[in-house]
Image 1: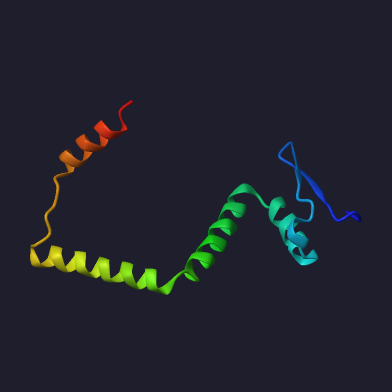
Image 2: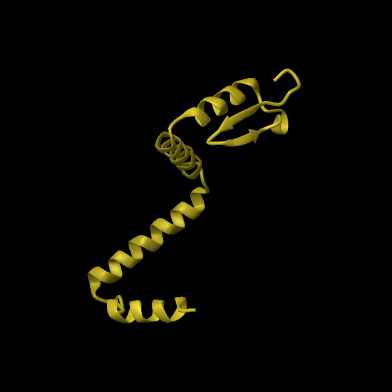
Length: 99
């Protein structure tokens, strides 16, 4: 690890992180520790990190989606939403996904 790169052998594969973009020592250690976690814990950690990133997203986009959702709920509540029967949706999906 003295040369600025580090390798971990995990799950029968060699992982070489080099030192991407001057990876800080603390980040290297956290990454190494995370890679040693059991699969389910790694997935949970990855999900948490993605949720944190998503939570810091564009507030204008979030506000637009909130408006859209409220408008759709109001349309359903007022009886003005036009629904498509489940069977029809599934038939159309099967047609589009058929080879």
